[in-house]
Length: 328
Image (cartoon, rainbow, N blue to C red; front, side):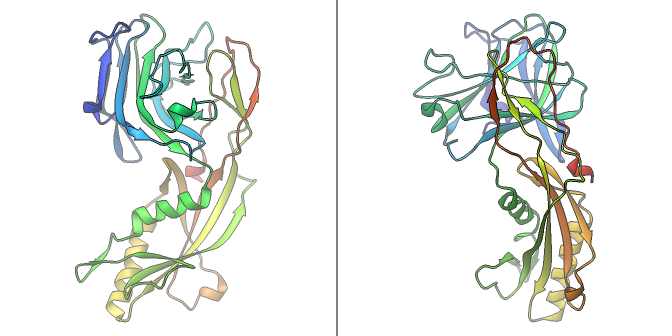
């Protein structure tokens, strides 16, 4: 979806549609996971000032949630002391943002301590005509006269696919990155098609729950002014992988093995669908000690689906999750 660092996608207007300079997008305002991100910055903005991006239609039906990582300098929990100040809306050509048949919106709950935090937004109640062809993203100021700065990475469309997400993250850092004789070396998952003449083979060897790790507990999400969602605590999961070089030539064999070591030993975490997941080199299993293997574990989490509950605003407490799994 539209990212704030792509400043050219965003326009800033008042509630009446006139250009405004009191709520703007500033690109490259912060860095998360080594990537610059942009920020929504308000200087005495008035209610209804907004920044909006138009994007090619996106089908969100395969996804459960949107996730945003936010670094904010002001708290927001819906209370009198910390009212909501930033709202997210989505729209489509069939149901534009702000029209009567598209009332969907979410307030962003924020600690406001300048640290990165996640905001999870469920898509279950997004109108079908929007969800199947989302083409507009809007952040709106909903608190008059308040100045704030929110660096935002996202929104990212996500679903509960722990193993597939980790596989994709490993492909990003290992698949085709190394070249031998001007030919990219692929990452070949097992089971799978026969690998190329030169490849880095990988197979998942362990999967286990880690109830000993912190989870952040139950959390409240999807604040809309009419209620919220309660999500059970995330379930920490540890996945183990073995990586082996595949090549007929000893020099190529060694180069592939050294590449895997270099890429993984210097990387404390993987970017798994926008979330940092702890990455660690570990001792190979006894049956693999005679093989030239690199063995790693990746600790991520399985997030159960939300369960709807009733609530009456204002909300006097907002629980915000801190993802500790990247620091295991």
